[in-house]
Length: 95
Image (tube, rainbow, N blue to C red; front, side):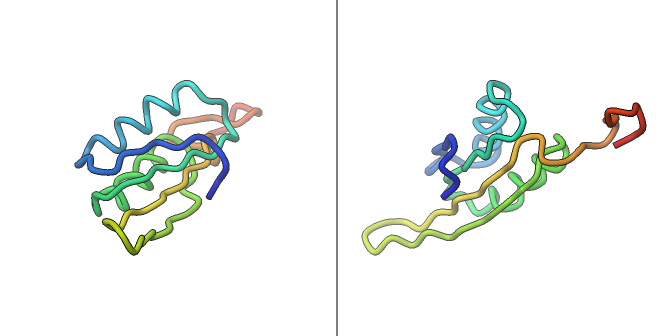
C-alpha cells in the first residue's frame, strides 16, 4: 500500500479506471504516489500504459485475493516519475 490517494475503480470496466485516475492525477503534485484499485484485468495493462504516456512511473502491481470476495489489483503510479515523450528537462533538452 502506498499511503497516498486511492482511486477505487473496482467494478468499473475499461476505460473508466484510467479516466478516474487521470481526473485525480490532475489535482495532485508530482511525487505523489496514487493507487488504483481495479477488478477489470485490462487495468493491469491500461494503467501502466497511461502512466508511461503521461510521463509518470508505474511503481507496482499487487493482486489482492480476499477470502470473502472478488479478487482485485492495486496498481500504483508515481506522478511525474519520469519524463514523457516530447517533454524537456531543466536544461531545455528532450526528456
